[in-house]
Length: 232
Image (cartoon, rainbow, N blue to C red):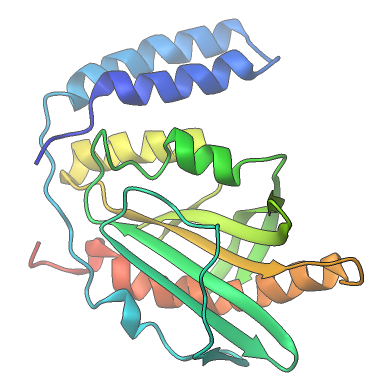
């Protein structure tokens, strides 16, 4: 399979830095170091990392949340993945949509952070801390997203093995590190969202999404963490 090119990764980081108002000499120095890393990365070829089980085997119960058979189609998706999962989970009268896109190997045409995914998800997002049911709190993104009349509050993150990542640049850097250290670039985009309307308490939905995410994180880790498997 074709490796992700150094130029594609560098373009993503350059775009992020050029949009920032906090350009410093330190940033320029960091870019020089990164350029050397990209040069080394381009020499490596990666291999796909399959899931330990299909995404469809995610638990039907996550804490107090239970999976529903109702349709889970929505505009909040990610492009380029090798496997997708979408399901509605309910707790009482609250319904949340869980969406995952798994990438067994990232390449130029199948990156977790690409312009389509970034345009759809990264719209005035803020970083928030979410407690994990199996470990320390993790930083994720929260955003209010809209397509036509469909408005949703979304809590989303990127996951590489057991590493939870909110920042797009960090995803690129972790991808490079994994390619060099393990010759794997697998990961997932995870989105927990809910539809919002005029009379909906958005803050309450954010808290509910954080609660579901706290149980979802360890469940996703079990499926995608290739560090715990020796057969790949």
